[in-house]
Amino acid sequence: MALVKTLHIVFMVSWFAGLFYLPRLFVYHAQTTDRIGSERFKVMERRLYRGIMTPAAVLTIGFGLWLWLGYGIAGGWLHAKLALVAILVAFHVYLGKLVRDFAADRNAHGDRFYRWINEIPALPILVLATWLVVAKPF
Image (cartoon, rainbow, N blue to C red; front, side, top):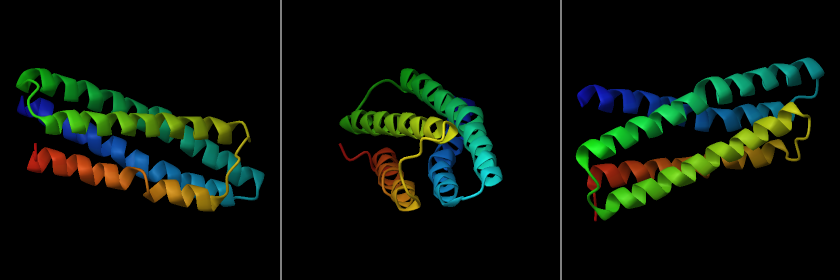
């Protein structure tokens, strides 16, 4: 079970790193004015989302379910954490929509919008989910 915990943490860190980095790429992409730079960001965004973030998210959820089955369902804190994971999955899916918009040259937002989504959604959820696991308040 220790190996499963370790793998869960490794993939979770990879997923969260992507959730923080992809919106930062969007900031730079939205500021790009030349075609070559835009194409470069499209490749970086696609590789990050499809090659790293999505597999890491799937493996994080898979190993999390494995741990859940191994330890059982206990405590309201776990249900709250699962709700936060669902929000993170929704955020991940929304970032995928933005990747597709950039890929099709349909970006409708400026760099300021991407600066907001870079910081606001993921950070409080990450902190709250970590607190729930460590403190188990209910």
